[in-house]
Image (cartoon, rainbow, N blue to C red):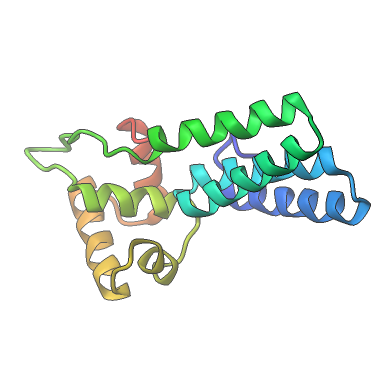
Length: 158
């Protein structure tokens, strides 16, 4: 589901996996599920949650001495800085470019976050998020979130 861009469905499936493996007490499965949840958070732009999941997975994997789970969690942690780096300006129609903050908001929009959740993630007011979204839509020449997300992919933001 994650590959197809269905982050909400991927998130739900991963949450089910974390719950199921935790109930069963299956440590290897828990570590794997935590890493997968970390990946969903990372793609959604929730780097803090991703880091927490990867670190928990790594700690558990080290505790049970599972080499594969250690490698997966460590790779996820290593990739996080690359995912959160700022993109170079992408020129849209005309001379328009998205600001660094607009790019951050656009990436978080992709993660099915509400305006309030985006505001909390970026430590800004919800009204500021709304202003950024309006600016993103105007600059991209779109009128809906799904169109902005599609256009963001076309422009190479993910």
